[in-house]
Image (cartoon, rainbow, N blue to C red; front, side):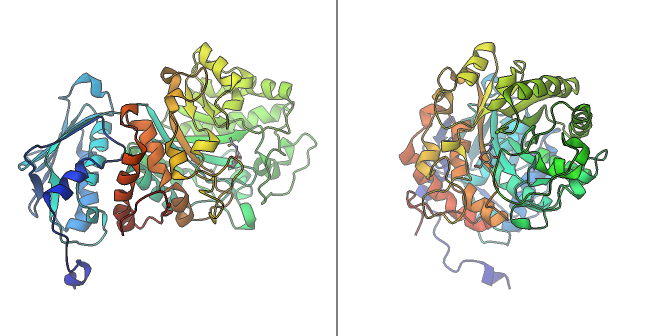
Length: 508
Ligand code: TNX
């Protein structure tokens, strides 16, 4: 019975409510001009979505978001539509990811240079509609969009999330669910930490035991798992449909117990260690002086590169406490050219800078202080940096001492701490022009399922998304906490289990 699913006393959709939707968007747009005369576009049951040639995929995505809650057919057409996705006709300052959104009584027009820009505009449009639009069952509406104009483009090119699928394995569906969630906030890269001491999660056809044995457990001794190459390609494709690039990481030369356990010959003493299900770090190392180490990595990187349309392979490089520094340098001086010979740029934890990679390599800063000589020197040479300072950006850190999940080695990270730093002006010697972007890692020693992921990522993820996207001139804690509160009904519709931070004025 339809009536049962519909709230019995739908709140009147007053003008001020609709207008506030326009000023509550996360990440904050570059410019928002609500129409001075008020007014709104109202999506009706016979509406169509126009998509230019080249924007069809974005049109279908929008229809797929809107159909379940509206119950409308919403055909995607190259003829006239009430919501219109247009390619080409915008100012150059919008770049590849920017868009313009115009809403009036007659319709909604989103214009951009590329499908990526239109996709970003579509995420904004979702937030301009009532929260019930995110429901998976038919709701009553009315489906209004406040009239006005938004012009928007990102501050940083790289806006990322990382998911550690090694400590605990997450199924392809769990990864896709997270992809859908990060797409809401215009995140454009998902870094997958695919191998660590506790598990190897990607099928490598030339070294099959990596996945079948090395992937057979996880922290706590559960069954673990791995992605077949077909499943992985499907994840990459699913992400690409949401304008998200996957960056695969194989951590090395430390964090490699799962590989060492799978192939005895990779060990210096030829003896395979047992699988590991604890959460210590820094005890494993590939054997730097054995040729087979490089044959192994050549095969792994070749297969991984073939699965990766994106430009980066992430080679880890952190916490190699069981590798001497000269060995570490020797190791990466052999491995870095292997990745580059595959036509890929290298990304790695900033420790990698000890091996002086080329200027195209992107170190990811995970330190806890605003000063790091290795990174400042690399920037002086010309490297660009991704910012993930652990005491600000690690979503596996507890919110406070009572948080049931997570770790606390880098401190507690409440929402104000997550939001309260400027990635373009944080590290000494790393000016904004040297910052490629922001990435929020989610390590999974304590996280076992989507509920756990969501509890740690929400509400912090939108804070990092705003730091990566919005102009610093919009940065304002009071505004942010109010806008964040307004997201909660959307998360509830989407079934996102979020942390009710006491810092945020959540509705009711
Ligand atoms: C440090 S950050 C690590 C990871 C852990 C994480 C837990 C980094 C590059 N290495 O191995 O999972 O802390 O917060």
